[in-house]
Length: 246
Image 1 (cartoon, rainbow, N blue to C red):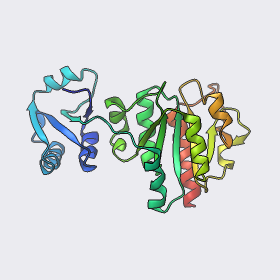
Image 2 (cartoon, rainbow, N blue to C red):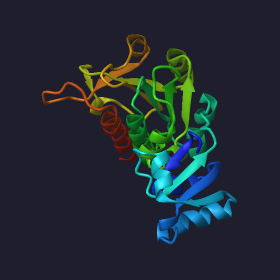
Image 3 (cartoon, rainbow, N blue to C red):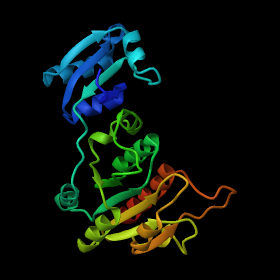
């Protein structure tokens, strides 16, 4: 099989619902009569996607550490979007912009978890750097549990230039920084906003931080001095959602 795979019932179902281009579908012979698998097969046949029934051992051999649930889809290479693509989305939805910039998130499981929360909270697009960051792969897709089909991801070569471009379009840049003087609940997220979160254990790079309009912190009361990036993203994004729906 190719290296571009989505596995698991929910991720594959969402990929089919979103009509993501799929080259073929592998189904464990033992599971083909089950209700969830039958629903996947119906969607695949409607889209004329090649279906192959194989042994469960075949799938496990190809994906030895994956919980594939007897279903694997081989996709076309993931297509990143452009900044122009995601800039159109808030206007189309008649909503103030909400973007998420991830500065150096290297763990694909963290990226997938952030994608899942971003989809649930209405983020219009995620921006990641081209270097020193996780790229979109099967681990990200599995962890995102289908969200990758709905949240566009932009990969850029220059993070700072991208921030300046967002500013020119009237978007406020809020960086999450441990120890910043403003608690996140005191920030005004009603305006078009891009949240910047740093990578695992490193935080936001100094140059990126210097180009943020303001910095916000998530107060910590325990002995650990930082939160996992996916947890921090969830806290911040739902504060944005709370402010915009209250």
